[in-house]
Image: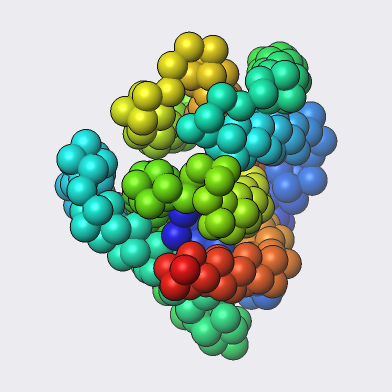
Amino acid sequence: MTDVVSTPVPAGAAVPLAHAGPAGGPGPAQPFQIVPLAGLPIVGAALVGLVVAIAFNKLWGIDFFHVVSGGLWTGIDLFLGFIIGPIMGRMSIPARVEFSKRLMPKMLLLMPTLVICTLAAGWQLARHEGNLLMSSPNHGWVIASMVVVGVMAIVAIGLLEPANLAVLFELKKPVPNGALIGKLMKRFIYTAGVTGAMQVATLIIMTRLASS
Amino acid sequence: MSGAQTAAGADLVNRKLPPVAEIAVLSMALVIVGGIFMAAHLPAHPPLGFAEVLLVIAAVVLVTNVVLLARLRDFAWASFFLVVKWSLLAYLVIAGILEYIFVLDGTRGQILVVLTCMLAVFAVNVPMLLAFSVARYQPVP
């Protein structure tokens, strides 16, 4: 994947509390970390590895980071949006809350890390392969991938990540506001189609680039 | 949930605030479009006029947003600053890695300045958006 901008949140991520309302509020808050600190060393190690791979500029290293991170990013996005999300939508509200408390903080670390690794390594890979040159027959596909990532970035950073964070802060309150959580989580439902389409477009573009 | 808590929660959800989030998204979208335009031309020399116009508009929109935000009185500033400081750190790291790549690839001069300014606008916009989105629903002390 040869993308340029970042999308730190799971695009189609969980729709867990979409139907939570005042009457069926999520229940009393239990302690949890909004940012799981234990994951920070892993994130740090991944970013150091990324910088080293780019600094050495060896094809295998940047290819590894791009393919592994990009594959996980797309796979997790589609899996959460279209498999886990609908399942969670049918779970009881307390079960959704419990699942969200465990899932969403991890997403807050995982997705930005995958995205920056995908984009940074992807840019270097495109440069390494000569796909950034206007004379390259693949140049148009690379630009298309940038546009796709741009759309995903606006949706994810502009709509989903703020909602994700606001929901986590709400769940930290002694008495979370179910109506607010429901309102915020509807963004995930409304944007799942756009993100799904963009991720499928990414798969088409990247497989096209890889086989040319 | 008691009646008082329900009313307080509804107040937090329904209160009128300036469109800081929407403006931040607009500013971010402008630099993303500008960034894609620039990236589409690299490593050759991109025409800078269009990208510079987008950058200037994005920066003006960002400053306007900061002014709107600064004029808020009844606002959970403690929550805002808690989120903004950590997310700013995270997005500075992200922007720093992208800047490192541009420098490593030999981008120099005015092109690098424009790209750096775009990354800076991006790295300020996102934390502000995240912090506002959290703080707007927090009780005002």
